[in-house]
Length: 419
Ligand SMILES: [Zn+2]
Image (cartoon, rainbow, N blue to C red; front, side, top):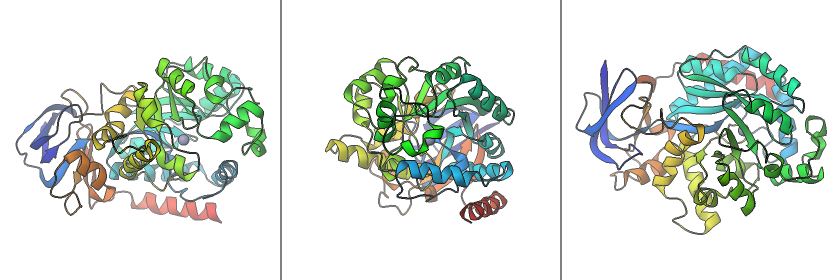
């Protein structure tokens, strides 16, 4: 059945904004973006492609503030201890809350690194599109395989939920484990060069990570990028990439390594500001990621967009270091490219999936609208999301919350973790 929504503005992202326009789809795929009204018209709003989150951990949705201000190693230890208090059902409830919060923020696709596989069930229940990268922590590929097999039994793959694997980081997995993960032919994602502490452990075996020695692989004598030199490529999504030197940026570009940029997480953990402008100038595929409330306050992709702009303009000391339109691409089409999903999602292009976000700008400082990209990026928030559509189906509508039970279960789980 053909359906449509219209608003004052449509931002297709693959082309210029269209004023007073509608997005039309049929059977879950976009047919056209054309001027004119639909029966479902949203005044004072802008229609965007569903946002693509290049890095999340849905199962940490209620971990906000744990270990705030602690050094990275202590922060990690706090999370590991508290996570042990949870059963799998609680993990699913927490991840489902994360998925519901993502949809309520206008996110329609997420690249989720999952410790327990709970996010696969969460995505399936809520209708969020997800690549679920099951995390492994191992120096021996046989141990990684054991962890992966145990978790993958909990993943039901579908049209919207895709199985992947995540060798956690070069300081917790050996290069042999990375090589084995990449041999599986499924999406692979990792954390790379998140902090100076990571490079210090890998090069010298010292620094803030050293107290966690029992879960770390031995130092390699090389920095993170050099450690993974043999396995870096277009099929290894790398989150963070903060502590990079210019030669390492060139190496990522030369190997077409996709990067997930997480500026709020990097700021709150005191890791630094990733060299976003240099990565983009070098031609690296960069998508924006919210990470999780374990390290950021929320799955609020709008706050993440603004953080990306604040950080980039501050780092470069130029107001044109990252414009609103480019920022929006980081959270849509560029993120889809980083995940290898650009033929399916990331822009309102005929033939792509009908993944659509409707954002109200009514009452924002950017209303009446001068530039819709500026207005959406600086005036957007989860509170302004009117409707989120995945595959042509409404998965969130303002004022409705189908997830009250999941919210109370996950709040109770947080209370237990704090006890
Ligand atoms: Zn992460």
